Image 1 (spheres, rainbow, N blue to C red):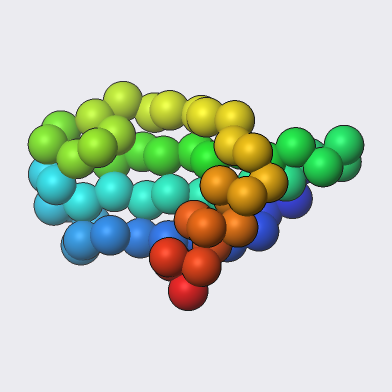
Image 2 (cartoon, one colour):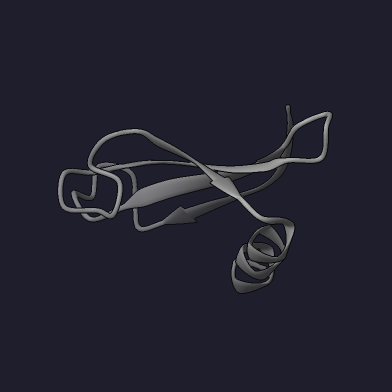
Length: 63
């Protein structure tokens, strides 16, 4: 998989902070990986498959 874009929200160590990484696989499928603090949207690591349009929207929102 290839990293398309990384986005960090908040500061390192912030319980509400988190990081998201958008990946594209060789077959063109997109995945969003998230990890963060205990009060963030990603209190546990999460990998989600995204449609191409959703991946493009995420990329635009995190420009």
